[in-house]
Length: 478
Image (cartoon, rainbow, N blue to C red):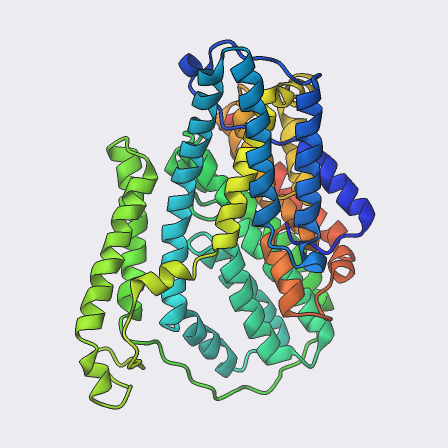
C-alpha cells in the first residue's frame, strides 16, 4: 500500500500483513507430502524478507520506489528458498506444482482486471466521466444536495467501475464546486470514500475481493446482491449524521460544458455486454469469468477498428462532429492498445508480488496456524468481523486471500459477511482503501488522515449497523 503512516502504523501493518499472508490453495493431488517449515531458518527468513518488502511498499510515498518492485523481488527470493529446500528433499515437483497453481490463479485475476481497466480507460479517454462531472457542476446544487448526490452516485457507480475511479470522479466534482469551503470538502470526501467502498461490496465486479470470492465459487453471482441493503446502511448511517455538519450554502454554478467523444455511448454498452458475457460464461457454461471478459475485450477491439477506419468523419469538420450522435469528437483515432498500455501496471505487478509472496508463506505452513486461531478458536462471526477491522490497516486483498486460502467451513451468510466487512472495513481509516489514499492526494490539505479519523466513530456505527442488518435480513443464509 502507498499510505502515509507513522512508524507505529508501519509496524502494525507489516506484522499483520505477514501473519495473514495467504497462498492460493493448489490441487490436493499435486500437494504430495508437504514439509512444515514454520520453525525452520527458511521459514523465518521468508517472513523477514516479506516484512521488509512490505515496509518498502508502505514507504513508497517517501522513497518513490514503485510498490511492485520490492514484492516482486521478495517473491522470487522466497520461492527460490522453497525450491532449494524441496530439491534437497527430492520433492521439487511438489513445490513446482504449488507455484504453478499460484501463477494460474494470479493470471486469471490479472487478465480479468486488465480488461476492466481497459474499458474504464477507454471511457475516460472518450470523456464519459468528464461529461458527468460537467453536468453535475452546472446544475447549481447546494452543498448538502451535492453531498448526498455525490454519495449516491459513488455508491451506484462503484459496483460497475472500480471504487478508485469512482471516488476520484466524485472528488473532482466536490473540488470544482466547493474548493473554497474546506469543511465541506473534508466531509464530502469522507462520504465518497464510505459510499464507494460500500457500493463495491454488493457486486461481484465492485471490488477485487468480491471478484475473488465469486471466482472461487464461494457465492454465486446473484448471491452478492443480498448485501445491497447492508451496504446501503453502511453508507447512509454515517452520511445521515455527517449531513448536519455540512454548511447549508449554495455555491455559484458553472457553465462549463463537456461533451462525450464519438463512440463513448457504444463503449458503455459494450462494457455492460462484456459483464453479461463474463457472467454467462461462468453461470451457464461453467467456464472461468475471465474467458468472458477477454471475449468482451474483443468487442472493444472491433469497435476501435471501426472508429479508426471512420475517423475521417471527425477530421472533415476540423476535429468535431457527429450529428448522428451529437457528441464532441476528436480527430485523434481511437487506439485500443493505448488503453491497455495505460492500465495500472504497477498495481497489477504489485498484485503478482503479493500473491506469490503470500503463496510462499502459506506453502511454508504459516497460514494453517492463523486459520486455527481465527476460525477454530474465535469462531466464524468474530473472525469475519475482525477481518474488516484489519482491512482498515492492511490492504483487503491479501486479507481476503488469506480467508479464501484458509477455506473455513462457513455458511453462505458467513461468506457474505466476510465479503461485506472486507469491503467496507477500509472506510474506517483514510489509509484503509485505495479510494481514501487517492483522495488524500487529490484534495491535499483538506481531506487528511486526521480529518477522516475524527469521523471514524460515526463510520464505525455504520459498520456495526451494516453487520446487524445483514444478520437480520439474511438470517436464512446462516
